[in-house]
Amino acid sequence: MKLETRRSFIKKQAIVGAGLSMATSAASYARIIGSNERVNVALTGLNSRGSALIRLVSSYEDANIAAICDVDSDVITRSMQRISENQKTKPLAENDFRKIVDNQDIDAVFIASPDHTHTPFSVYAMEAGKNVYCEKPMCHNPAEGELLIAAQKKYGKVLQIGMQQRSAPTSIEAAKDIREGLIGDVYMAKCWYANNRQTIGKGKATAVPDRLDWDLWQGPAPRREYKDNLVHYNWHWFWHWGTGEVNNNGLHELDVCRWFLGVDHPTKVTSSGGRYFYKDDDWEFYDTQTVTYEYDNNLTIVWEGHSCNGLKIYDRGRGTIVYGTKGSLLVDRNDYFVYDPKGKVVKEMHEKSRSETTNLVGGGALTAYHMQNFFNAIKSGEELTAQASDIFKSNHMCHLGNIAQKLDTTLIIDNKTGRILDNSFAMKMWGREYEPGWEPVV
Image (cartoon, rainbow, N blue to C red; front, side, top):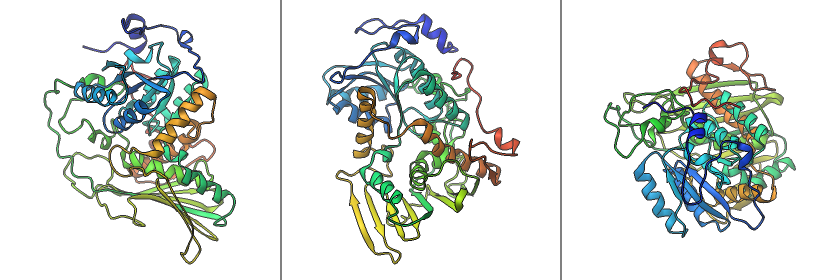
């Protein structure tokens, strides 16, 4: 059965029971949260990264998980069990995001569903008066990033992007040290990611498992047949739903590089690499990729991705190094080191609690800090550490890297707007087509 459009769905549906009701006007959803009042939260996308969010939100004393949403009934069952370990009240459970987003008792929505849903779901939620914590990437393509920023401005809601290293004390200290000239004039930053991902095989068209609502899983994406190697993780490596390793993991460190160097959009982007491992499987993106970004004032950022070769760089599976005229600075999610020009450590700092780095969940202290910042912004107006208008510039870097690689060309960029210059083929990759009725509109 074809899904209704979101707006007609909202007008016709009603949620009855548990004190939960639907409304049709975003203006009626406003609920002022007192400084001592608990924030009612809904979470959508409960597998993988979503499981880490469940653990943290359910243990946060000023929050209450009022609703959860996933298209897989088995994931719903597991999530209910996890929540019950820290929370006495049982949340509402739904498989359709549209049934929770307009619930007037919900204050904030956490979005950890697949990449192709991030912008549409965030726009829907803010239109309905909800504050949003959106996991990275904030957008599936550049056009969605522009749309999401416009939506946040229009609806005036708190929108935190899940770039948790922005809330890390070590990284905040490193940014401060760079601004104060500790390593001199910075001129280059390099970041990397290395893992040992295995083949995803050749997917076979098969019946959709009873536990999964495949139509709802696809949501805003035009419909494709179900194959047995897509859900719940391998969709990352397909252009139709995912955004590749540079967005899946490279985005975190590229954001740190851009933050530390104090730059916005690049002037030139080049990318090299390909699919070198398991060449006969369905993986569409790149398991090996090096993207170089050039900026004004002769500044350079490089990302090196090795999805299937886990040899660590600087003894780390992921990290960032910044080079300056008086030394260098190395930082990851747990540690921070400063070196003099000869390589001697002159300063070091470590996070009090360790964070996971290369697994599929990514939980730990940095997410807790980042989530606290989000709740503080809702309740007291604290400034967000990961504003969408700023993070988009980092997310955009990843999209530009993929476009440059896909077209095997050097992209020349308007560094004021981020737009690709004089390349109509590249600009065709700026946005995407949507399943009718699911288009995000501001």
